[in-house]
Amino acid sequence: MRIDIITVLPELIESPLNHSIVKRAKDKNLVEIIVHNLRDYSTDKHKRVDDYAFSGDAGMVMMVEPIFRAINDLKSQRTYDEIIYTSPDGKMLNQQRSNYLSTLKNIIILCGHYKGIDQRVRDNLITMEISIGDYVLSGGELAAAVITDSIVRLIPGALGDETSALTDSFQDNLLAPPVYTRPAEFNGWKVPEILLSGNDALIEKWKFEQSMERTKRLRPELLDEWGED
Image (cartoon, rainbow, N blue to C red; front, side, top):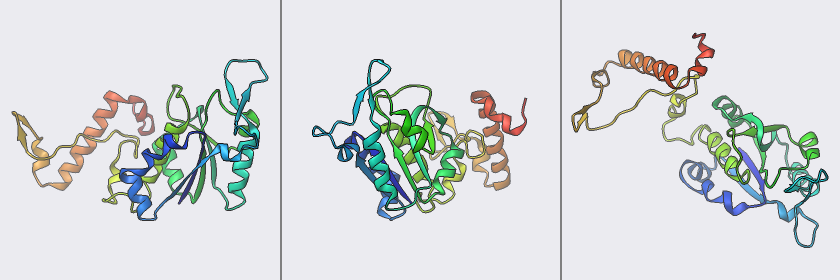
């Protein structure tokens, strides 16, 4: 898989993509992540990529030309399955969306900045807009890092245990059950006896019940998919 990220602040996004699972996936050649500086596509002598809004509103807007040049340059080299724009009014990132994106071959992520991008980019070049929450960040770089991490960990071989991602919260619209490790008792706090029983069927039943209970208590809206009241 290849992920191209277009940004005005490449240094802000490079660090999160060079550690932990994402780095291991890159080292295994499971994913190629290329960060592009949008200013490299500016024809302005000062490498400007923003200008005032025609509406007269406060704040600067990312210009259409450098973005067009950057995306066109990338598209001239390969076919992209999705061209994503990080936007607070995009579709909310969720596990199902990450699952879908992890199956693709090539994607572009355009990081928003300033007051946003010229609407003509969104109308003519972007195929998907994604938000990571109902709040506004200084730029889309952190959102792009979150999206990338959520995708890469799902690529087969990225995680040490191939089944680990399948038991994550939200994979089946349920929160994950509580987890425990050694010692079995600490400070009088005990691990549930069922987890020490060695009975796989009972343990799986307990985990499902715990997932249902936690979801009902903490995120009841997720249970709509299960037909729960």
